[in-house]
Length: 323
Image 1: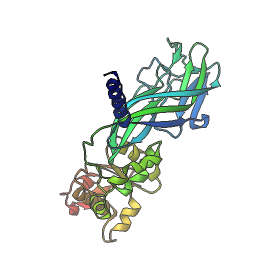
Image 2 (image 1 turned 120 degrees about the vertical axis):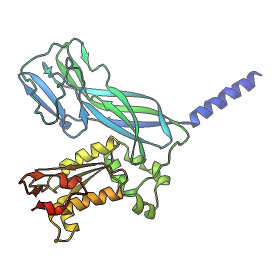
Image 3 (image 1 turned 180 degrees about the horizontal axis):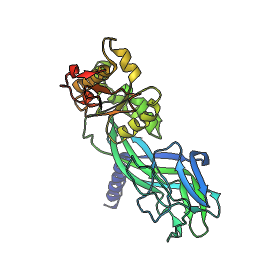
């Protein structure tokens, strides 16, 4: 009986182990990844090349949190994670500016540079890594974490850079609950968003055929129209929107103008592009005109006012407008 019990426990352990996978993930930061502006002995820290945010507690130092994304299999869930880290001292006898207050996007941020805030805790942050959740981007399943790459010793006014994070992530396999279709065009975007592009092969069995891809590609919910010069800037917004689950594309006026005959005005070429997106994308809802009238031309009407409604209303009669 004792032998049978031991065999049963061993079998249960094997079943549990067979349903789990441990993924190792390393994330490293360098001093050159951040801008640290010191004014009146107060440091303002901002990342240069990462998506980041600050906390909502204005009585805490503004230590940025970096968004890190890990690609997992479509049938996997996070079971648990642990990590170790190394750090390096980078600044002594320094104060850290407090978390900035949220303001509307059309309002300039005026952060005080000459006020020292007395923080109450001995060290910040209390948590270096937070699990945000899992979500899908164009069929790929991603785990998102917020990582704070700094530690502030409030007692000794010392700032440390958390250089290397090493994660052990336990993943639990579950039954697949949704249809997964992967398009070749999305792979470049996903590779730019995740820290483990080597795992993109987890989705090899879910790629649609070329004929299916031709039929289902270019399905966008959000379109940004700008010019070639501003495209790299708006592409960052498009990537962020897509990361949040709103599939976004950036179109340039140069490409739009070249796609239609010269008998069309520039404004009508843009209007036709938006109409085509609307007619061929069942989820298309939003359009952003990225730039002033010298980038995306406005249509003049007979009351001599700049109007963008021509781009939004398919029933507007072009005869009431003038170039």
